[in-house]
Image 1 (cartoon, rainbow, N blue to C red):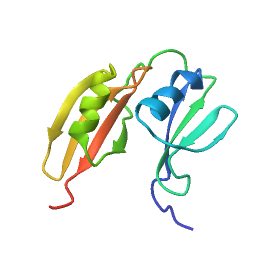
Image 2 (image 1 turned 135 degrees about the horizontal axis):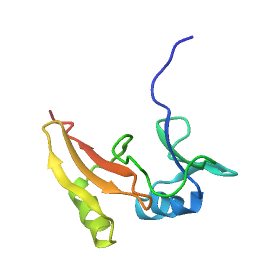
Image 3 (image 1 turned 90 degrees about the vertical axis):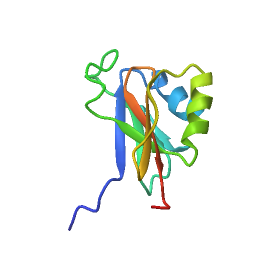
Length: 122
């Protein structure tokens, strides 16, 4: 047996409903599967984001830069403008870095999320 790679990155909250509307409705990530206290956004057979409740999580993220979830886009400037217009707080506007462009924002509990656009032409 071998480790194959990334399958899911999870963000926990004391209340799933603090995060789910943001990731599903604002960011637009599709619900792949859900159960009591846990939702997988995206294709459960590929890299996805898990949102769940956890008994040891309280309030806003104490160290939000420790774990950053990245979501891929093919129009980072357009998504930045749309989300900014919806009142999403950004820490960093789209910043090109050669093969990849990032923009960093906060979810409702202060966790950092990055919009990521790959320059596939390089």
